[in-house]
Length: 164
Image (cartoon, rainbow, N blue to C red; front, side, top):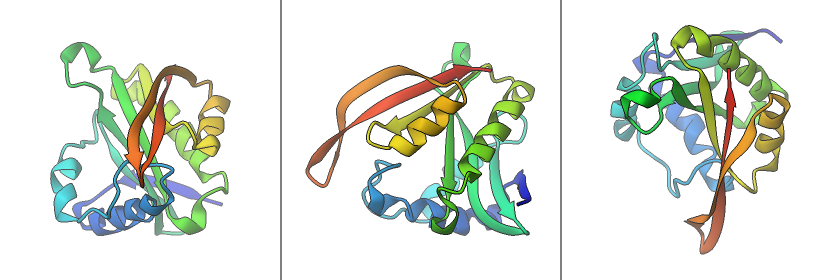
C-alpha cells in the first residue's frame, strides 16, 4: 500500500470536512456533537502553513482517504516547539494500520518543522488510538476527568505526549 502525504489545498476542504464529520457520531474522536460546515472550517484551514503547522492530505492511489494536521498549543511563544496533532481517516481506511503510518510521518517530519514536543488529545475510552500512540512512545501527560458531555454522558480526555 503506497501512502502519499501532500499539502492540503483549499479545494480539498470539502473532503476534509466530510471525513471529519464521519467521526462525530461515534463519540470516539471529537467533542463536536453535530456536523460542521465547510464555511466554519475556512479560518481553521487558513491557520495551517507548510513551514511550521502543516495540514496534509493522506492519499492512496491519488484518492484522499484522510488528513493529518499540526496545530499550535496554547498560543504563547514559549510553546512554539509544541504542537497538537490530529489524524482523521475515512470509514473504509480505519483499523488498517494507516493511522500508524500517519503517526510515523508526523514523528519523522516534526523536527524539520521546529517541533520538539507532540501532543495528542484523546478520549480515554478511545482505546485503539491510545494503544497506537503508546506504540510510538507517547506517554500519558494529563488526565482531564469527565470534561466532555456527549449524549448525557461524561467522557474524560487524556493528553498523550512525547518528545521528538
